[in-house]
Length: 177
Image 1 (cartoon, rainbow, N blue to C red):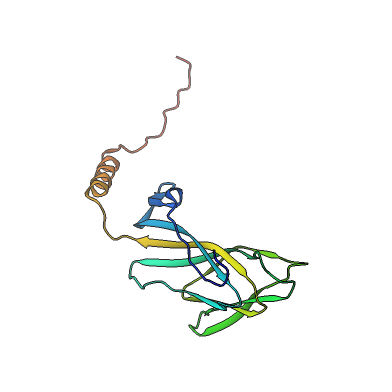
Image 2: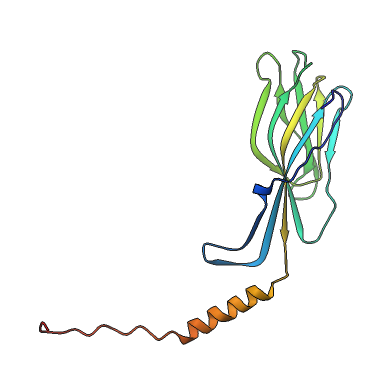
């Protein structure tokens, strides 16, 4: 990534794509598809903020899970404060400092999948950076389409349950045969 530019990088990981109609024998109301994309941006004296936005869709939920903030090549030994601007539970915009990085004592910070709902703005409140922010953009899609195959499987399992005979108590014998 070139210094002074903010870029969002993304790629689809085939291993991160999950389709599930049920888990452990439990039925989920609708099939769920989850995609996970790599996210990264860089803040510096040239690019002091970066906003992560998504297009609104009815059947998807977006989550930005932050993994790490770190100073990159060319950083000075100064305090670099990174602030996140997002919305709280009342849909009010709030700004919260999430990291204070300094090359000589704390050049990186692990955020352990700190989850945010987009839109999210990252600001370099103080310092000149460059600060690299990495994470995952997760997209969860709920599908109301139920395939004919799933419907027929449900009907077959219902018929099988109806044809089962009730369990009878075992007969006890007093003598040995």
